[in-house]
Length: 109
Image (cartoon, rainbow, N blue to C red; front, side, top):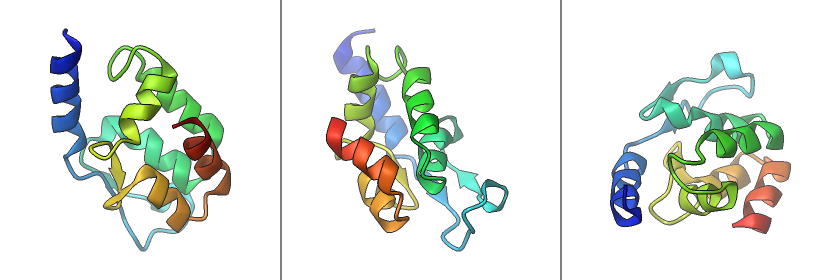
């Protein structure tokens, strides 16, 4: 698939609302994912402030979203990228005080 077509497919996928119940506790059993649940790992990583889960999500999407983990990270943190509870990944990590994930996202994007 050409890169431009891949970007269009990703942009269409990323614009689908991906939400987390705003009143959910930090335990993952109290979290409800809606929208493109194949990308739930990114939001789960932020909710749990778990860089390992974030890196795993990046790795799983190599070839689907981008050619490398760095490219996947750039795509999901872009303006048209994924959102959690209506916020970009970086903003959502700030709101949830997910300091480890926030540092990872901002230092590599």
